[in-house]
Image (tube, rainbow, N blue to C red; front, side, top):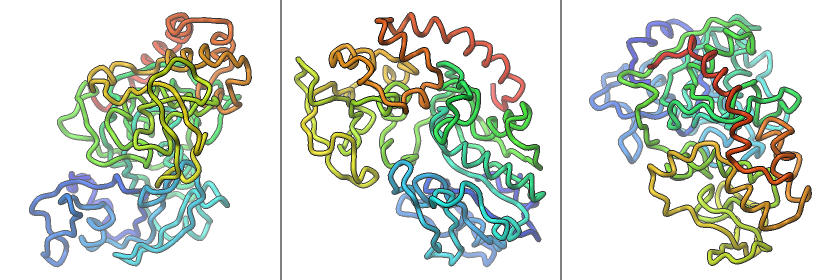
Length: 375
């Protein structure tokens, strides 16, 4: 986003739309707008992409918003209506309004180039890349250019988990990629076009500078309401599968994706009660005392090393001894295959499950190599 020399020239004289949210910010000390005035900044001194473009004199016609809305405060999957950005007067067109997964023909004709800038976290079931791909397909159909302003992947180079069996394709999984895919948003866009997973469009990626996939990157802004900490971002791959079970992973508490539990778990000293909170208006097991595990004190480096592990799911499944009733159909949509549930119920260990998906993850790592922008 801050490398304006790389993309401002492509916006001049064209009608611009953006696909953005609360993460589309950066520090730009000393930067000024078209009138020579300092750019509008937030309380932390960061400039939002929309303000940057608007105050630099570009014709911004529309803001498209992904899951959680433009401000990043809506629940997971919650319907978000269109609105108007109070600061600039630019219309906000929600891609999660419950009526459409892509903009109307009228909306697509309102701009010439789409600028995409959102902070992803590097997992197949995190939905921002899906919104980007849908917009890329729409732009291909209407001959609109797409510019992706890339951001680091906080989960770095990790490529872990089974590839999505496309029978389980859904709103939380759109591509035949592992749970942890080791790609940035720009690299996902390149790979999706290159492998024919998305329609070929006029695509430009503005890469991050001074970045490699080994760079530790701590997010300056929470990417969504229930990933408020860096630890939650690291543990997300291991705890999100609980969304496909009867177990709470802490939605409705101050530690989402850092704790897990259920009212019937036994021999646990830690407990919590999910309550309505911003970003979790009606959390699973709301109002029920849950017993379980607290991972919120795990050192960050340890949390970063967990990756895609099913050890916590296996622990809870064994404790509750509910058999098939432990799982919901969402489990396969998140994991991406049908055989993981079967192996867990048969008593397999995390290491045994890992051994089964490891070859396809390594094959994907080789396939993705030609689309990488960073070492």
